[in-house]
Amino acid sequence: MDAQLLRLVQAGDVKSADALLRAVPTDVLAGDEGSSLLRAAMVAGYTDVVESLLDAGVDPNRAWTDGADPVSWAADHGASRILQELLSSNLVPWRKQLPEDAARKALQIARPWLDVDPVLELRRRLGVVQEESVVVECERIPVTDWGLHTTRIRVTAADGRHAEVQTSHRAIVTYLEGRLGVPACPDELLARARFYADPLSCDWAESQTVLANQRDPEETFRWAANLVAHPSVDTRRFVTDVLHRLSFDERPFKTQALEVLRPRLRAEEDPIALDNVIGAFASYTGRGDLTDLLPHARHPNPEIRRRVAGELSAAIGELPQTAPRPDPPLIPFATPPDVVGTLIELASDVDDRTRANALLTLAESGIDTQEVRDLMVARLTDEYQDARVEAAVGLALRDDPQGVDALRQMGARARYDTHVGQRLYWADRILAHRVAERRMT
Image 1 (cartoon, one colour):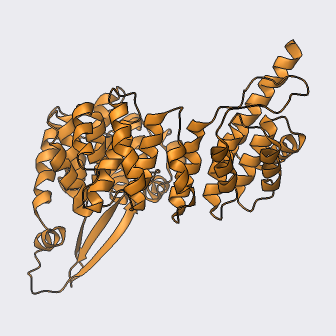
Image 2: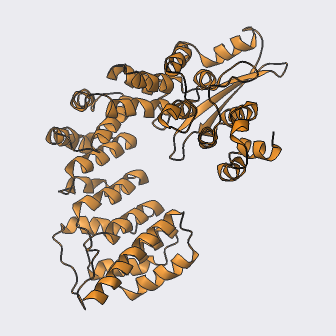
Image 3: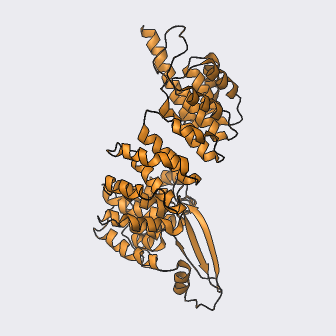
């Protein structure tokens, strides 16, 4: 086996590994060497490397030297995101296909973990009796680029032998039930999410996905609406998260949803649940009156202030992307003054992300007053890069020379594959379109 390729796989360097994989013959990748690389990537926990290996022709059916096959190993070890990647092979024509019963087999392997204590089960597998001492290590590990994580438990015996597992078997069971067309009832999905009660865990996210995407939305809405004032904080966090996810599509129960959410805006004290309520309320409202959100613009939790700064974009118009008339007047827009004042206040918040969110909302809005321009000029020297970028974008879109100059200077230093680079590129495209428009008139 290529030692360098193995090191890259174990390190999760997918870009460099891809470059070397292209030089490996297909029949080699489909054999023992590819199988060893796949195992290394799975044990290290790199889903993106697993994806690249499967795309390159590695066979997910091939058993490892100890007799385990990849799907069974992932189901047993609680590697939920990797298991989903393996099972997605049947949706990708150029990959090696899995047997039709692979998902059902994985479900049979994962389900027993829901009824055992993982530490006790690992002790049993190591053959360590209750009286013998072991070292138990718990580590939170990321499983996606967007923040999901799980916990890895490792039990080490006195003689150095160890066994480990990830605590995402509930996510695996939920995913596989949905895939097989037999999703659990909402109360059971809630119970699975609440077992570890972590809104960023795989278990929580998978229950959310099934409720929002695989069950009848009106039925799910009624179930969640009945629980929004539940005394359990974890329950309120979960059901408000469900209501928020349901709001991403146009729904016939929009009016009822707003009636349910409006009282929660005033009553909810938990920041996580409140964040969900604000997001859902704004999404169901759409282009409309969001003054109900304004009292939270001074919430002590910065996450809430960030949410308000972003969601108020739905309460204001968008800046025209076509070329303004020569020497245009300030653009009039019938936005409630308290909304504008709130955004200006948030654009000077002590929290970096809140300032950036408010400036982004103002930058893309139809609000063009001298006060807004002065604010953006002041923020060109903000200590937080994203805030400086949004200030420059906002001024440039208003054809302000200071903004255009700042945009060019920032663009010369920014990489395209970064958030800053993408924002600058977006604004530059609009400005280029305006220049072309002016030439044609």
